Image (tube, rainbow, N blue to C red; front, side):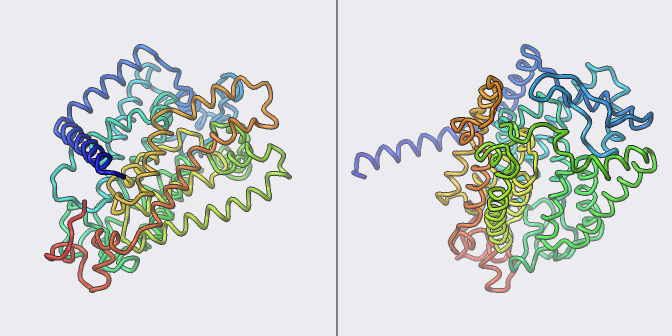
Length: 467
């Protein structure tokens, strides 16, 4: 690049920094504008929250019977929306059925937006602390932005429970580890990261903290099965007591539901839990899982899909394991969680686009994590912003709905339909690829080599602050 080109690049970079500083200084106003725009959008273009309609209407049947016979009539390609969660979820939703429908919708919107703020705040808590004092502003800005990402919009429009469960899981996992680590003050952002990589995870884990983290994962999984993947985070970070409490909490909740509704529980856990076809067509672009992508690319015939599916599963599992191993070595708690959650979304048979709210913590890690300056991190962040910000999946859904019978599925729709899977793989690559100097900058790997605590290593004159 010639001198003129370098000057232009520097001017663009300086202008972007000025814009970023202005936004940071007015973060509260940015969030207020975003929330106002959201309210205006909901009032002027109201949507029918069909999933919330199912929760509201199905919940009383957990007591009277016929919980899994209840369905809301919609239109193709999913003409009926049945209740597909465990019976414990119906018990949790039961208070909603006592409220008028309008009050239920308003309450659900308020709770979901508040949950979004909790998700962002807890994601930042899992990152190393930054000394610039702008943590609160970043939380407000990312909440303002996250409100308009497609998975979040879809969750709000459908009245889905994803944001609430995500907030429960993250609030549990981001809780302080408790007494036992010297030099880590509560709220410093340093709790949980150890002095020597993988071996330091779980050090200083208090009993009360383990109960809270395990209960958060276990109860969320008792409501909806997908949050159970958070248990892998507990295992990867060597939080053995928390993992045990997750099993206890989930098992207790399931047992309570079984005692209240034994017939519905037996029907769900012995028959319905494996019937993914009740949820909807696997091949639809609405399904952004690896299984859905393979079905669209190869065809809907089970015999043709199986070999490709198993091959893809092995490759994706290897990529996720590589990313997880690298994040654990760095003591990178948010990186570990992002790797686990994205892997869970990929391997689940059905991952509707609204399940992908975990793109927001992934984007936060890519923008602010220990490897945020690496090219792969910047590339993955840009692709996520384009895919989730430009609402690619809804555009593809509208095109798909005009197809008479998508068999074979058109390649022009099938390949773009892999967009979230592609973003997840790019994120795995960004998590896995990072030189030693970037690992040392996170304050963990270098500490492991010297045997000093991570915080002490960062305070030495030779250490660079986390940027």
